[in-house]
Amino acid sequence: MVTFLAGGTGTPKLLDGLGGSTFDPADATVVGNTGDDVELGGVLVCPDLDTVLFDGGGVLDRKRWWGIDGDTAETHEELHRLADAAGLDGGPRYLSDEAQVSGREIARWRRFSGVAEFMELGDKDRAVHVTRTSLLDEGYSLTEVTRILADAFDLDVTLLPMSDDPVASIVHTEEGSMHFQEYWVARRAALEVRDVEFRGADEATPTDEVLTALDSPVVVGPSNPVTSIGPMLAVPEIQEALDSTPVVAVSPFVEDRVFSGPAAELMRGVGYEASTAGVADAYPFADAFVLDEEDGTDLDRPVVRTDTSLDGSDDAARVMSAVEEALEVVS
Image (cartoon, rainbow, N blue to C red; front, top):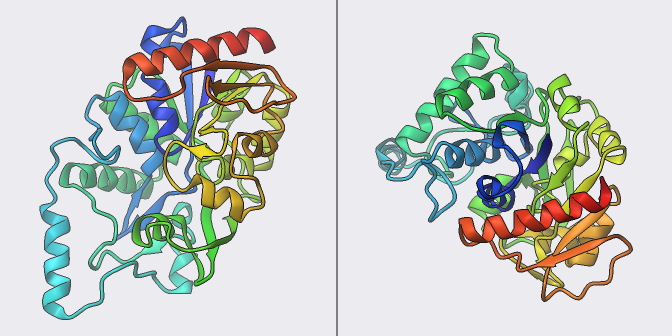
């Protein structure tokens, strides 16, 4: 049994290596970040869960690592046409403060209008969000809904949201506070980060399924330490569970060079060095690390080195092999 903590694209890319490893996908659990989730036009979008869902189901748009391959976007385009014709402003349109905490609790602090939606949702992609939201409205938990969707996509691994409670990643910038998706998608990470808040994390609890999964050895993939893994670490019981189980982390950096995304800016914004050394500081619970062969960072924990680039299934299998080696050292 092994459990992966997943957010963004780093860990999903690593999961492509499961088939070439000694890990049985049927014995693997993926705990997905939900701090990036948003409610957009009344439907709950769970980007990090969906990346694992779509990739495992063989339908992910791998050019963008977002949405469903070959999907159309007619509804998205019509929303923008209507907004333009009506003279309505586009961009992120937050609902009122009162609306942020009313209604469906799982969507708190991250509710956006669907007018000229600032995130592109494909038509088939949107059907997933409508199904998810409707099942939540019927009384299912996010964990139960995720299991239903995983079955629909014939997922080999067990996919779990980190919590059934709302946690929202709020980025504090030079221009004010905003949800991570506004910072990343609408603002293109062009603002100075001054802090990141995981709103609701103190009150959130992991499900029994997540706590059971964290009894197994844990792999933290090469995801953004702040907004992909950070929301999970901010939930007290998850942090406590990681302190008492073998953990291997794959660095998303090669020394001070990040593979992709806004991890460097976010790391600096919360007070960590934007480097592998900074990742080690952010992950005091990690018992060993997998680093790139060109990364000479000297850590105080066991290190296995390999080429950590993840450009395809062969790369993923190679890095997964290094993960297995590191787990043998600490288990």
